[in-house]
Image 1 (cartoon, rainbow, N blue to C red):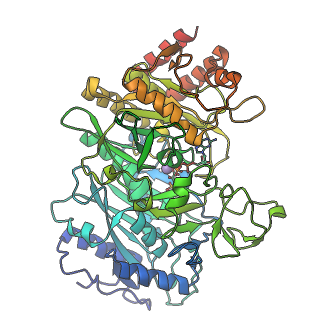
Image 2 (image 1 turned 45 degrees about the vertical axis):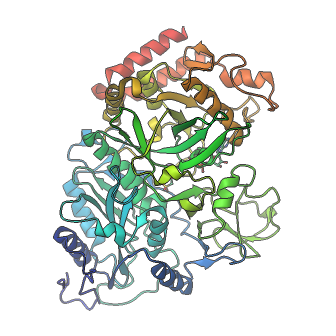
Image 3 (image 1 turned 90 degrees about the vertical axis):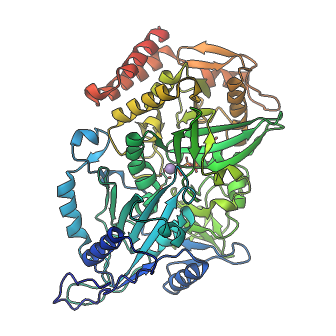
Length: 618
Ligand code: GTP
Ligand code: SPV
Ligand code: MN
């Protein structure tokens, strides 16, 4: 198949053939690729088969270009360090757009643009944006290939770094491509770093280690289920399977089709009595999902197994229960704070085959970041490539530096991850990073109260996105930056799902590992000790744990939370569950103002919940 060059007179070498593998006959798919190639004018088109050979060739090329820094193979085999441009280190929420036909359908918490206008703008930006580069065709499946909850997508990208990451994060390659026939729905996603190597006159410029553009656009067209991302090579801006597809487009699809796409980890717990439980937990970015997903319980007899650490797709099964899959195939985890003490499972997972982005390099050719070891190396090369010593007075790794690693390397991976039907959820947990007010754990009174708790989650901003770290912000269901439609309609969808499931719905809990004393110290030891809270939740599911009713929910009765072997002052325990009526009244005022943003679209059930909470507080 040959495509006509967009600018016939130009001296720019562009791909003249799609070079599709012979088994690809889907005309819509081929037309889309040919249209995007005509627009972006890449020099070559490469169809990613996902093979080891392809990985070898790509990495060899990127090492030669100085893009990948191979780590010491004895310490970290088949692993690389990548340093991004210092202007391209996290998701860019102010450049993220939901381009629904109606502005109200994006809602007040999303940036909205008229789809037609945005389309025109994007076409201008993407015109010739891949000149001099290879356009990679990256077919992928979210969830097991052909599974009933799984979905297919194709990302076109000019970033080989994105390709290597997509190969880890998704089931990528020809197996996924082969599933896309004329009748199978798939999500098209276009990505360019916005750094062409050849100008209109055919003049070449040198490439840089991390090509990107100061102008960035992360755009979603929910009604046509399309994704267009321009200008960034980093994380959720560039791995379009993750937030763009699995959450923003996914949440929109879920509402239409009766399922849910959530920013949740999935964990399997087995009690000393050998009973299994499945829980899903939504925490905002960099608030401990990966940690909890890989928890090493400190209480005897309990076993924890990992199913997912970031995204869950939930669907009611024929038995009326809620089933969950992790659509991803890898972890894109926060590096800083990950160490043998805080997350030994993650440390073992990244033994090799790992891409590290924006961490520090040791003199031995291994990686390091703040919190990895207690002992700080005497010399490092920091994430920007500069010499670093402990008295440099700056961080060696970027606070949002990350590792990309195949999930199958996780020593605690549950065989349930392979289960295409998903696992039935017993509990859903909402959490955030809150120094005050929110208790260590509380049980929702019922589904509607649980939805109220989810809708009012707030958290201190982390480095996972641009913004002021530490600022408190509302992050309903940890989905504020990820909901592809009006957040108030999303709350209604949650309420509707509860009605569908009735008594089979999972129980809902709220947790907070981050409450502090007046000196600013964490009151709760966290990490493996969080297993005590999980144990209490499991006991509650079985009706075996006593509760005390507080205005904000049901908390463990005196002696009901297992604190055996834990040294914690009774005063700390008291503070972890303290409810200050004045502070809570202020919290309610903020909730009211937050709800007001959504006007009449706020489900009446939630305003009733707020009134009821206020009443319980007096
Ligand atoms: P995304 O990948 O951005 O969605 O984030 P995540 O929720 O998976 O975050 P992650 O698990 O990587 O946690 C990031 C930070 O939270 C790290 O710095 C951890 O040290 C810290 N953290 C995790 N669990 C706990 C805990 O129980 N207590 C305390 N104090 N910190 C924790
Ligand atoms: C998050 O910010 O929640 C992440 C990282 O999981 S990213 O993939 O960059 O969105
Ligand atoms: Mn996340």
